[in-house]
Image (cartoon, rainbow, N blue to C red):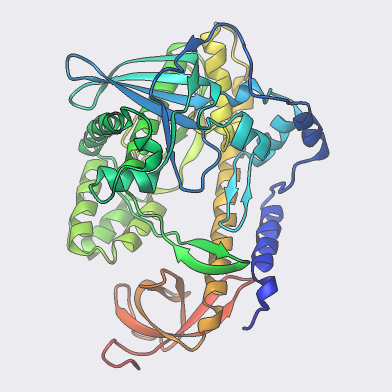
Length: 496
């Protein structure tokens, strides 16, 4: 399938736009929202007395290309060996008020959608990457979660309040992660800020305490492969995988802890909350069967600690197939969802994270549930009534869950089309692969490099999950995201 060079990226953009509309999103901002945006001249100003924390060594750590910076972090060593961790989250509600055109658009889409070829932001970039983003050297209003972490990784004390903050260093996962792991130098951005090296080590120490405790309690360590298209001069030139590192884990651990603090804070204030949950899996017996097929035994009742121990052993035993096992477990666990939790109700919890109290509060530029939580937090701090009733929150929970699922489908569809486009010039080539799926619907295989999955439509008889095969690429369909292979035999039988 030959596609004109000038139309390659344009075709993916068309696919992304079409997928957004088909899944119920508004890919463009309505005129009313743009008119409102035109009247916003600067970042949030004084809204009452805010604590001044601009002197702390705040830093942001995010993806290399992220411009919508939602959170900052900083640590403080306490005399008794504990660490006080501060997480600052952008106060988006200061500029985006409920019921305004910008809010109504965000409420409809509920999330930014990242397709790899185009980002469809929940809020206009003037806000999300500037006026409500915690950009380097900019004074911004924020909601701050203050947590004291003891030597065992327990949050033994916490506060939530509003404050002024200032990002001293805009850092990246790859840069900080490589340095923390001893694989690279401290980035120039961090090196120019006196004390930032010790600050990052302190944050990493606190994060590892939090992480170790969660894993002891059964938090699941999973690994799934989601190649991201890399574009240059209008073409897809590569499919990149984001690998986990200590910097990514640091932010993940801080965000999980902060989300737990905000959930408990609202519950103690007697507010209804929008919780993020993964229910105890109803298909646990299927997970047990998967383990048995790999020669392992899991208990008859759901047990996240036993499941994570099983996953850890499998990662060590068969790292090549571990991402496929992870994906199977993720599907059997069931999707995360938003639910209303009324005051006094027992929390449903998050099975995958092994935490009882959890909401989303740390990415209000990107997710509407976080903006809702911020409005609840600000009302609770002001001793004001809840800005949302129970019925409204319950309806929003259903809507946000549905839109998040739809966003995942849009992103997956565009990734598939980008993969097909990337391989469109390699029809007839041979690749090493591993069989990842076998059912009545067909046999699927994942290439080892590039990491792309497709269907074996010729010579699939007798193949089963885990088989290592050589495949020939015989056809791609960019619009549908289809990639078709022919079985070219085992490694020793295949053409060179």
